[in-house]
Length: 470
Image (cartoon, rainbow, N blue to C red):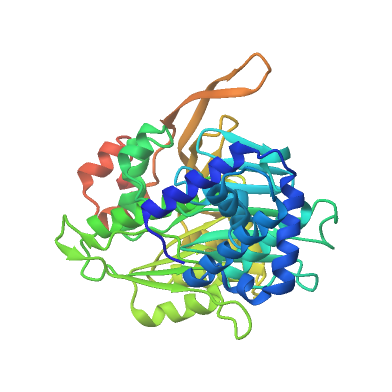
């Protein structure tokens, strides 16, 4: 159901008023009574109310009717109470405000009576009367959200990963996987639709100017980059920034970008103003069963579209093998995956490549991954909730089965500040260049078009002549 910003503001105000007014009656009992009557007499209207304006208005009229019957003789805010009951029955209940709040990054439901609202710099907790009124109420809302993504969450399928409304991801579990008295657990991660800027990344302290310049230089000049980190570390945000820089700055005749995602999350510019040209971006998404189309399938298909840069947004399985193959055939690869530091990221890649059942040894697969992703970035969300580029590492080869390389940049922690309760409130440190790129990478970047002056500015100690020595 589409509503205007004014209508939405009115809804929020009415919903908030309902929560504040209390009403002197048992709201959970009232909700259950009204829900039971409408489910028994008007089940079809209830099921269609979420996506149909006319059905929604009919349902609200019925809610008012039965509220008046249930609360005969009581004084209450009709509009606010009807809106609250409607949201709990056919809307998204207590989650509504937060799902539409652009500053909220993630919502975690830890059972019906404890909800975490994650903002960039703090967490708000909803519990008791502020959370869901019962396990059943929580189940209804989360099932409804999953259904918006075209999937069913029930006793036969009690564990679901789904996508709703423009890239918002929801992972949910219900009984019997979750104890009946808890109702449901869920993690809802929202897409940031605003384009992240260089100034924002620098102001937040996530990264240094030289680190951004180096990564942009790599992608624009044929050097693949891997982004490693845990859930919530900001890998998708970094991909979007680097891709927009690639679109704006890449001078190659073929600068086509082939994007592969599980859900449309990357918010890329449609036009490169600096070069006065439209972005050459091909968007694709995977498909769930039946007749699944996997990331591995789409990486194979991407090679037929003559891309310069392949973006396998996040690899978790054998798709890493196909991405590594593509990286060895002249394509630049930008991908993200879970790992705990830049060095171990290559072990993680090898582990995923084994999922393809290639029969190759660890050493051979490691050599492939080093060749495919010479540059590895590790990003982390620290205890103070800040997100930092912790490491940028150059892999230079494999010797006796062990990864060889150079740490180029690192976030060096100087001090951890704590409050009177011992909680970390600020991690103090700085991004530092701690190494120099290899002569081989210098020559490769230069030969691919990177300006020598920029390479020397970033790495003044590099000796490119060593690459030409026998």
